Structures are given as C-alpha cells and as structure tokens.
Image (spheres, rainbow, N blue to C red):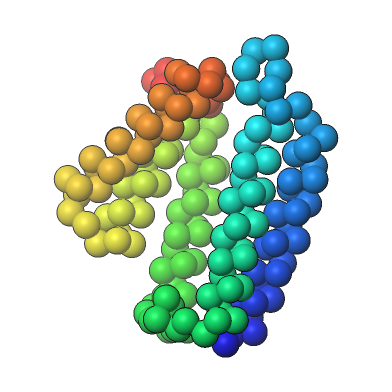
Length: 151
C-alpha cells in the first residue's frame, strides 16, 4: 500500500466534499435551464467517487491496477510537458479562442504524449473540440471564448 495515494485520496475526498457543499448553495436549475450549481455538484460527486476508488484500491492491495506505475524521470517529464501544454492552451485561450486552443492542445497531447499518427491526432482533436462545442455552446448555450476567426 502506498501511503501517498491514500493521503491524496483523502485530500481529494475533502476537496470534493467542499465542492459539493458549495454547489448545494447554488441553484441546480434556473429559469433558463441548468443552474450554476449543476456542474460543480456533479464534478464534486465524480471527484469524491474516484477518490474513494483510489483509497479502496490501495487499501485492498490490488497493485495490478497500478502495474506501470513508477517514478521515472521520463514519466515525470511527460507529466510536466502535459501540464505545460495545458498552461499554454489556457494562456492562448483569449487570443486564439476555445476551439483553436483546444484543437492544438489535444493534437499535441495525442501526437506527442500518446504517440499516435498525425491523422489520428487531428481526428481526435477536431472531434473533441466539436463535442465540446456541441455540448456547451449549442446545447447548453454557454458562450465559449472566440478567437480572431470567429470560433
């Protein structure tokens, strides 16, 4: 059992409880549809569930769920590169717009981190961006940041 995973699970469970508590103060529904409490409530529930799963797997001693785990410098470098790419995408969000920055981020993550072909990476990136646009902008009516090209 790794104590770090149990502690991380407990911290995430505490964060999830706080998120759920704050979300319950907000309206779940509004006169226009889903309210501001909808997303944080379900996000908190998902985080709480996954944190309990992490704790449970580690306490029950099922290491096969974490077989490829290791503190290698290559793994650390990949994690830092992913974090850096995410920070860059966030910085470019208002400049390029959500769709363009999301496509670039996803393309680079799939191409470099998952080592897929450029065509597969582009299909995943465009499909993911289209999915986000359809769910949030078209269905829920959430305005996404637009870039100089209008999307």
